[in-house]
Image (cartoon, rainbow, N blue to C red; front, side, top):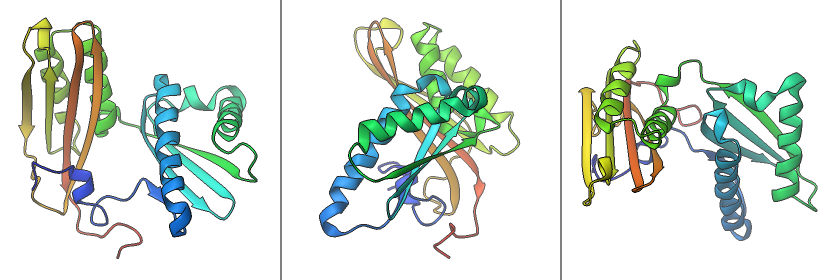
Length: 220
């Protein structure tokens, strides 16, 4: 199963936690879940320059808290916090118009870009879009990941018309170990897409940060 399912989904409640954290009635569940997916997609697309790694959403009665993990918090916060205010107004107008819902945005800084699989995948995708040779992009990113003391293993895989070839193929590189079958293994996983002139190239990144022996908060 380790190679057939998302490593994050396999470890939910063990070493990973849900991106949406709330309870709802059966009637409202599907609507609010779709709302979360659309909101997360919109934020990542609209503020792409901010290097957003993840968007977690917490709901309570009449309140929606959006927790954004980013490698460039200054881009979102803006001068004097004006960026947060503008973002809050845009989100409330687009997703919660006509409802008495309080929207709160919390920015969480990622100090090391190469600890996040999402930011690493985005980095590889950007290099491919800039026409940097794919082997150089793969090797360079894996080497940078392994320089981090917390990272014990890293793997990057790309698939598509690499180098403009007529037939799509798959290439990957790996250093260290990635124990996908060990449930207590802390593995960060992410996907990204590079939109090149030859078509879309998919990027997958796995980062192994050691084992976790404590349950995720709330599941102990």
